[in-house]
Image 1 (cartoon, rainbow, N blue to C red):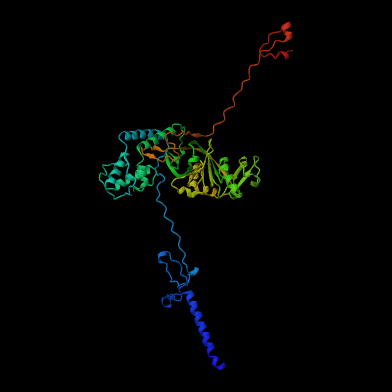
Image 2: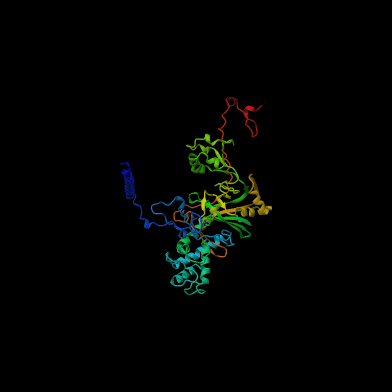
Length: 500
């Protein structure tokens, strides 16, 4: 029996095994072997297992994955970052005109320009070009070019006799450049949306700009000297003028509309190398206290010391920052890298306590609209500006650069203080009659705007009024004198009680 039954055991086992295999195959339902993709062949043995992603995502190879198996993380190609779009074309530009924005002839020349623009208005002004105008430049032709030429001719930027046809020629290019320079734009010679916007400003708005600028200059008592500095706030530009010629012109950053830079007439008196910065009370309230509530290490990270009225340093942790207790203390930032005034400050006595200075945030000088400060004026290329200020005292650029690398404060008084005027001129005429316009960044030209007055050097406090004592009452007659009579007191005699 044993011999007969032994062949049956392997047969039963084989049948059970085949049943298990069939059951498992039905549960997993794999892909048919005939349609499975084979593993990709490697072209060369030296090829890496995971190739680096190419710069062009469209050229990235896609390896076929085995059916039913997820792609390993190591084999996934990282998605490249989206490329940064190129910056928009620059619109504004610093003027290269050697004529000062503000000089002894400005008021008279601007009055003449105002009369001419009033005549333009009486003749009907100018029409508006289509705001949807595509870019037109040299070589363009058609009715739009004709309309552009007529618009440029009205203000005197183009002589139609020199370019009468519908072609955008070289003469038209130069006329467009002339207009762009007059409104503070980059002189590209091509007409795009920013130029169209300026061309479409109505003549009455130009008249208002000239009128309001003259009104603001009417309060001026500025003493022009052989050397002086002008900051035109709407243009965000400063000029170092010598011999009636602009020797240096600097981009500047002026106050935000809510912290407008004032019109100032005073003198630049002291150059402070590596200055400290005493934080104004308004900034302590507006900025410092909220930041200290969020991060108690704010003052330490800014290298700001807290001083009491006696000049003793106070631990900020001892202050209750949930209140305004901090405004009772002096917050002073140490000189050096990161100081909010940069490496130099130029003092100019005035009642608003504003001044000109450097800044650690120099990237802002590249902005189109440079209105970021709390009222002071930050000067671009300040080393050149300081060199010009100190040149009469024998300073050269190398010496200025050396001072700005130090860590100790150094004050250099100008032996010849330089007059400085911060003006707000949205329309004016240069000595050669060229009329310039800038945007009204503080809305001072709008109807109903409050007049803006010039800030000057702090006047001496008026003398205390002399309080006159009331006249003494007439002397009462002495009782004994009323009885026995008394001699008449002469001038210079001592009082009766002291007579002997």
